[in-house]
Image (cartoon, rainbow, N blue to C red; front, side, top):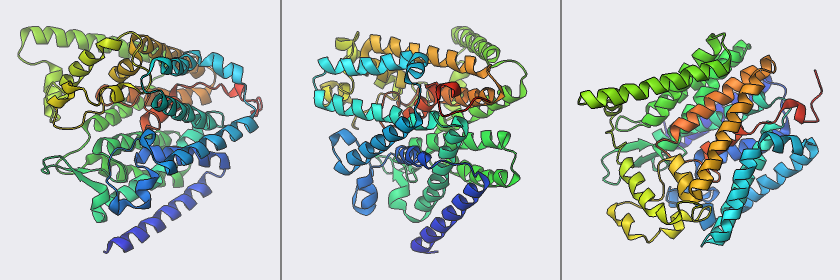
Length: 451
């Protein structure tokens, strides 16, 4: 089959899938188109400038602050449309601020940190983009049915990402396939920018399909979800040379969490206490076996996944970055300034590649915002967890919704142990994080009638 015929068949297939989905789920609001486009844009990680001419554009990570007017205006438009939608929704802003005080504090701290940033113009641009992320996410969260709205934009994005990624991998390899620097390892990237990006996007969307299989009653919908679960599993498996092991891990963890949360009659808070206890016992096991044996259980698991206990060199990177950051350990160099300050740092010369990521979300927050910012971020997690638990006890709808939020949150927290997506503007997982941690009570949206 020629590439053009394959592409045409893919377009026809996706169109039919959208028609089927819209017939099954008849209650949709046109305002969800804005967050859907935003999520699809962030899931690919590629600039609009790239898609206008992919054959002549190098598929690398694209930094909007460096410059594409097309992307900048596109994101401004999405932000503007979202603001209009939120004004029409007539939301209770005071209630939302009260429920998300720690997150508001984090955004305010990022804004204040611009004062001592050496790259104020870059910091301001990144702050505006990250505010845009939360504005667009609020369109979903203030919907009459936020859980269905969230699942819908996940489904719609997957309907495009999965088929077109497979087509690009098979027929448009200059887009869908990448290679390591030595040219020896082939990686599937699909319509994203990296195998890890494709992996985590696939893992999140697969989790949503499995979750929908559990909660959905329509048999036609379930058959459609099965098709995309199979497509997602195919992509998650990666090429014969390489795959995203972290993404495979968080998907497996999501399946375990769904089984536990939906099968157990215990409340979510008690389940999480059990999970924390299990983590502490695992830590003690690692300490004891590490003291008396050559290898711990974690070492055996990590090495079996094709990595060593340095997490493919990440520990060396973390050590170096923390050493560099000691000059700004308390308040950080200013939001968005760390990587620009250290572009010419001679310590980075120890690597043959350009070091532009900490490969750890928690370390990245410390690098950008210092210890003060890291403490505020911990407060965000604590308040978000409390809100999810409180909401889960409200009614059956919120119980199911809280399960989804908790599963996604845990997936993101684990993924950021080896990748960096926290406080990264227009990042796919940062957007999902906001959709997960921001709490908007159904009562705090005035357009919702009391049952």
